[in-house]
Length: 371
Image 1 (tube, helix red, strand yellow):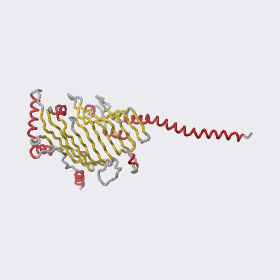
Image 2 (cartoon, helix red, strand yellow):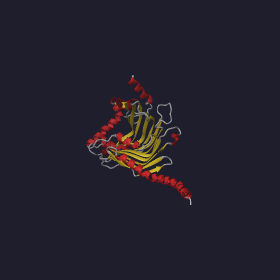
Image 3 (cartoon, helix red, strand yellow):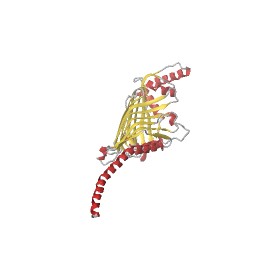
Image 4 (cartoon, one colour):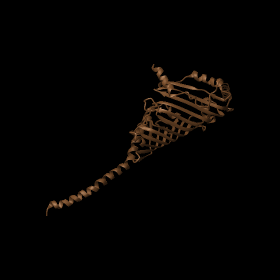
């Protein structure tokens, strides 16, 4: 019998088995890769967080969604190494990082991030410790940015919180913004336009005392020093909610009244121009039998309020201008003092944004300095 004829069926069977064996092997490798990928990504993320100078952090879980080109970070936290309170500086419940598909049709590969219930709590005692080198702000912000494999073009925050806490105060000071919803679009200028500020930002929140916060503006984040034209308003916050803060630092308490804050800021080529305008309305100070000096101090503040408030509108306000190079930013005292008396005796500030700070104002300052 011909050995060649016997080997042919054997080879056919081998090639037939190989035809099935190769795709099965490939599928098995893909499934194994898919199963191991979350653990590999989690290890990478934890290594990035652990390498931030002065901070430590970790994530609890990673979910991968290959079909939509996304991965979800669950339970990310970050805190200072020598923090005493153990309150996480950053605590992001869920971070969804994915490809922004609509930008692919415009020839750009960029990402979008959705943060669900993130919180940023600045504990004064933790962040101002002097027994160790002060961590660099750029270290942790750059590290978080490195967790995103491609440039961010859209950012959305849902139900976030920002707080300033001073534990050593009695009672504890907790100034916070809750229910923070923010959207920032076209951060990488995917939608090309002739306008100078292509990125649109809008955010709302609820302040301590139930005040309404609104942030709107436009930015150009592609530049090294971002250009921007932003406005912020905080309206109708119950002034009594500030008592822990004002009593600790100024020794006064509010019995009633509302607190408002308005601000406009423009930046062009690193030059900033803007203002902050705090405004107290219908304020009544609370008297306490806590000693002669305290009563005297509250009486002095009450007299100061009576003299400097606008009696027609029953408001106490000032406008604090800020302008100059971002590396040498400072408030100017004399315009602040002038505006206190202007509010008291001349016209009174209205409970609205002044609307007199534009992006062109910052550009004009840049042109003057470059002449």
